[in-house]
Image (tube, rainbow, N blue to C red; front, side, top):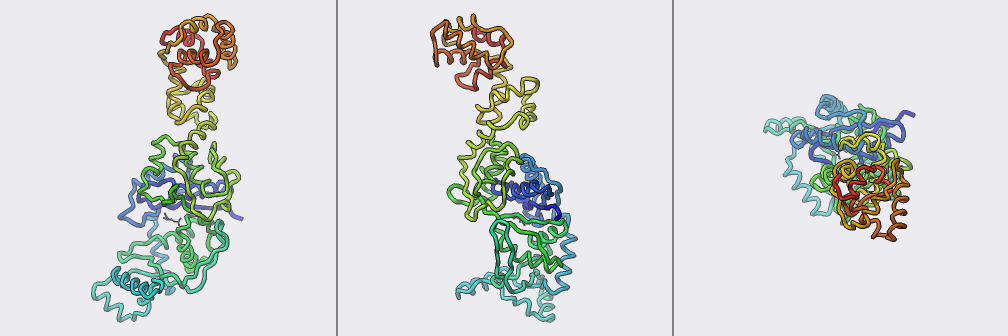
Amino acid sequence: MSLPVVRFAPSPTGRIHIGNTRPALLNVLFARAAGGRFVLRFDDTDAERSRPEYAESIEADLHWLGIRPDLVVRQSDRTALYGEATERLKRSGRLYPAYETAEELDRRRKRLQARGLPPVYDRAALALSAEQRAALEAEGRRPHWRFRLDDGIVFWDDLVRGPSSIDCASLSDPVLVRQDGSFLYTLPSVVDDIDLGITHVIRGEDHVTNTAVQIQLFAALGRAASPAFAHHNLLVTASGEGLSKRSGALSVGALRDAGIEALAVAAMAVLTGSSAALRPVTSLEDLATGFDLRQLSRTPARFDEAELQALSAKTLHGLPFAAVADRLALFGIVGDKAEPFWDAVRGNLAHFAEAAEWWGVVEDMVQPLVEDEALLERAAALLPPEPWTADTWGAWTAAVRTDTGRKGRSLFHPLRLALTGRDAGPDLKSLLPLIGRARASARIAGIPA
Ligand code: GLU
C-alpha cells in the first residue's frame, strides 16, 4: 500500500486559532505515524478575503507548533487546473449555468421554508432552453455554474465517525463557479486532492455535507475511488461556544505571546474530545504515540482555556534539555552549565522566559537579602570546599543545623534569601553547585556577587 499523503487546507483569511490547529495536527500525526507526507494547501481562491500576510502568519504559527510541511501549495497558483476540470464537467453535462440573482434565490428558499419544505434548489436553470439562456445573456446576465448532483445516497466509511451516508436528494446542486468566474472551495479542493495524490482527507465535521458532494465530484472527474475521509469533532470553549477567526485570545499568535508552550497547545488541540487523557507531552512524536483517529469522540470537544496555563507549566517541567537547548541559547544560556541549570530550574517554571531570570541568579550579580546575620555568619564559616555536587547543600545545611540548632524554615529561608536574593525558587540542592563557592560565600556575607 502506498504511503499516506494528507493535507491541511486553511483559507488565509485571518490568523489561525487553537481550533484550526486540531485538523493541522491530526493530519501531521497521521502522516508521521505512517511515514507519509503532509501538504499545506492555502485555499486562497477568494481573492478579496485572502491575504498573503495571513498565509505567512499561518506558516509561522505552524512552524512554532513544530509542523514542517513537505510541500506548500497555493490554490491561486493552480487556477488553470480548475479551469480544465470545469470544462470537463461542462462537456459531461454535470456543470450547468444558472442565472438567478441572490435575491431571487433567497425568495425561493423562503417560499419553500414557509411551506415546510427543505430549501433545496429546484434546478430551474437546468430546464432553460438555449434561446432562454441567450435571452438572459443578452440582458447582460452572467451565469454562475452549478454541479448537477446525482440523486441517491452517498456512502463512505469515515475513519472517525464510522459508516456514514448522505442523501443527495436533500442537497442543492452546489455552485462551483461564481458569476465572476472565480471558484468556490468545493471543486478546487477535489482537483487538488486528485492532483496531489491525497490519500486521506482529515478535516472538521462541518465538512460532512461537502464530502457527499465531493465524492460525487471525484467520480465525475474520473476518480471512482475517492480518498478516505475522517471528520473530527470541533473544539468549542468551556461554555460551548465555537471558535472563529475572531477568537483573538485563542489565536495561536496570542497564545504564543502569552508564553503558552507550543506543545501544550498541541496536546490540548489533539487530545481534547478524545478518549485519550489530556497529558503534557515532550514532542509531537510523543503526542502521536498511541494516538488513533478512532479515539476522537462524536460530541463537541470542549476545552478549558484555564487548563492551558497549567498544562503549559507541566509541559515545561517535563521537557528534557535537548528539547529546549536552542531556546535557552537565545537567552545566552549555553555551555557546560546549561543542562544542569535546566534540570535545576525547569520544575519551577510557569513560563519559559523565567529561565532567563534564574540564569541571572546563577550567573549575574545578585543583591543578597540579609535576614539573620548570626546564622549567615556561621553558615559562611561552614561552607565546604569545592568541588560541589548535588550533595553539598544537604551536607552543608546539616553542619549548620548541628552548629546553630536551627532547623526548618528558620535555617533554610535566610540561606535562600542571601544566596538568590529571592524568597522562593528552585531547589537549592541543584542551584547551589551552579552558583559556585565564590559567589555563594560573598552573598552569604551580604556582598552583591
Ligand atoms: N479551506 C477549507 C477550510 O478551511 C478546507 C477544508 C478541507 O480540508 O477540505 O475549511
